[in-house]
Length: 229
Image (cartoon, rainbow, N blue to C red; front, side, top):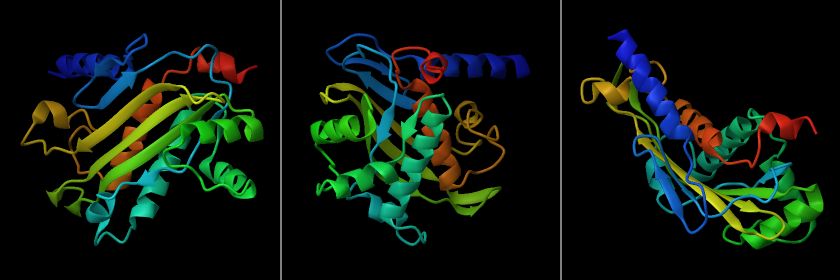
C-alpha cells in the first residue's frame, strides 16, 4: 500500500510541474492542485522578478469574516507566501513592499489591472525583467482543531506573470483548494501536508499552495544558473 502512495505522489508532482508550452493560451490543468495557462514564452530567463501586492477580490471579505483577519491582511499574507516560495527557487525577487514604495515615490497608485505600468516601473526602478500580479478570492480558516473540524480551511488565489518592460502576458495559475477529510476522499486527502492525518490552518494551506504555484512558474532557464550570474 505504501508503494502505491509513493507512486501516486510522484505522478502528482509531475502534474504540478507540467506547463503548457507555446503561445495562444495552451493550457495544462491539474484539477486537484494548480490550474495553469501559458500564453507566451520568455525570450530570456528571469533575472529579477518584481512582485506587486496581491489584491483582495470582493468575495474575500466574506470568507475572512469572523476570522480576525481582514481581506487586505489575507491578501498580504498570500503575497508573502508566494514571494518566499519563488525566492526559494533561486530567483532574485523584489518584494511587494519595495515595489509599492517605488510606485508611491513616482506618484503612481500601485496598479491592480495595469501590467504595463507595473512592468515599466519594475524595469526602470529595479532592473526587473518580469512582474507578478495576483488576486486572492478566498481565505477561510478551519473551524475546530487540527484533529476535528466542522469546516476545513479553504484558499483560492490567482497569479499572472508578465514580461518587463513590455507587459507581455506569459503565464497564469490558480490555486483553489478546500482540504477534504480523509473519510470523504482518501486518495486526495493523503496528498496534503500531513498525509491527511490532520486539518491544516488556512495559513498552512495557503503556504502549501504558494509552493506549488512557485514550482510550476516558468522561468526560462534553470533558476540556479540565473542566480549565479
